[in-house]
Amino acid sequence: MLDHALRGSKKYWAWIGLLLAVIGAGVLAYSFQLRDGLTHTGMSRDVSWGLYIAQFTFMVGVAAAAVMVVIPYYLHDYKVFGKMVILAEFLAVPAVLVCMLFIAADMGQPMRMLNVMLHPTLNSVMFYDMSVLFGYLGINLIVGCISLDCERKGVHYPSWLKFFIFLSVPWAVSIHTVTAFLYAGLEARPFWMTAILAPRFLASAFAAGPSLLIILSLIVRKVSRFDPGEQAIKTLATIVTYAMCLNIFFVGLEVFTVFYADMPHHMEAFVYLFKGIEHHGEVYNNLVPFMWFGQILGVIAAIFLVIPATRKNLTVLPFLCGAVITALWLEKGLGMVLAGFVPSPLMHITEYVPTLIELAVTVGIYAIGALTLTVLYKIIIGVREHGLPQAEKQQ
Image (spheres, rainbow, N blue to C red):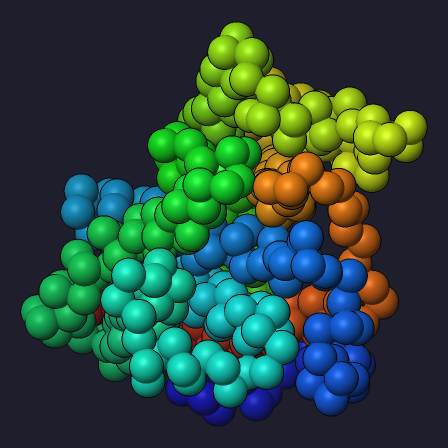
């Protein structure tokens, strides 16, 4: 099947070349961080997590979102998702890969990741987070490769594969739940220490991940003869709508609880995000415009998604999905991480600004994910375009 990835048009190879160039720039930037350490980043004693962990948190949700296609198709025999399920499973693979790369970048020295696995601390949430990520990567590789190969041969997937398919459902939920526990278990950070954090993470994941899958499905329809199905895309848009509305509801619950209880140490992070904090005569408000933009954009996207006419319009839908992704990235991939550090347990305020090195490494990691996704989707398209008629005939 790999031969499909080695054949393509000039546009395909130009895209591959661009991604390789971006990856090269990211590797060059990372070489400075690898040589000199995290001093090349904007992180400090008071802000120990930055852009890398923010991207990790967001992309875990994208990886977990594959379950929103797997559950209806395999557990409820929803045949409409038959052509899209492989796209969802292979979207999870580069998403998990990107998550692992961001963890490696944040640790400064990638060799330290081996210590987590070789010398595990069983009461460390990071150990379980890395374990479930490795497991989820393996599950999706097994399910995706075996089912695609069986489709290429025109045969039904083996019965033993159902074990991994069913296992992927709770495993997908676990990867984002454990990630939420990384934050919620830090008692010195009131902004994160909330029982609703895991449900918030899952709701945002089930909105952002399917939104990206819709955009990718529309791109696949445009650049190839493989059509994941218009009805499947519209059904996925409905899932995005419910998940986005649920996420907005959860955020509203947090805001009401924090401000109605009127506990200053719980309120400060929210004040910092949406108004800014004044400390010793200086106002700290770097994130305020981003947070307001993200929240307003998310509400507008949710309103238009609720309206059937705009949700079912495949010309408007990708823009709404892009708005959902942007809004949730700003909320969870930026504000969620940075606001937890303001103020510090010692009541110091240190604002975080990523450096050019961090930005270059981040873009380079995303390019690795995009390259992996491109290759996997090229294989899927090749198998579908050449083997689908035979498979349908066998079924």
